[in-house]
Length: 149
Image 1 (tube, helix red, strand yellow):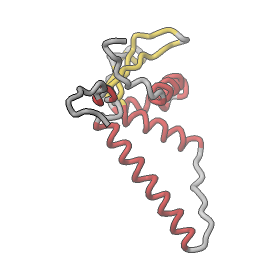
Image 2 (cartoon, one colour):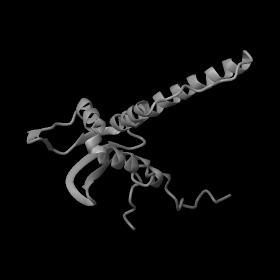
Image 3 (cartoon, rainbow, N blue to C red):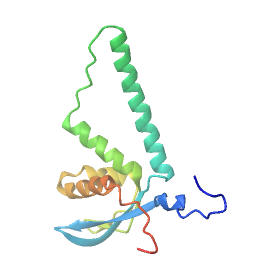
């Protein structure tokens, strides 16, 4: 294919994703100054999440196969809107590393998974949940920028 003496022109490490990325929360379309830091695909938090999701998927497939083997029709569990929202919040919290200092009703509101869950569960602050889901759904967010770009 190529001569061994040739120097490779493509470095595979250029495909590596960033370990972390920050999202700045917008309020009415304007940047707020408040930043949330998320784990990238290769970060340990993301790997743990992927493993959890893979285990859940395997269990679901096993249930489907057991139903087929036993001649039954497999019916997925019904989910409520609240359960779907809770799952989305869990996906965000599992990837959230930290946030910059912020207050709630004039009091410091430090980062913790529990505080994040409470904040993301508040319907009055639904824009934060939506922004986080959009951010994590954008596969280019964790792409490292080339020094030549």
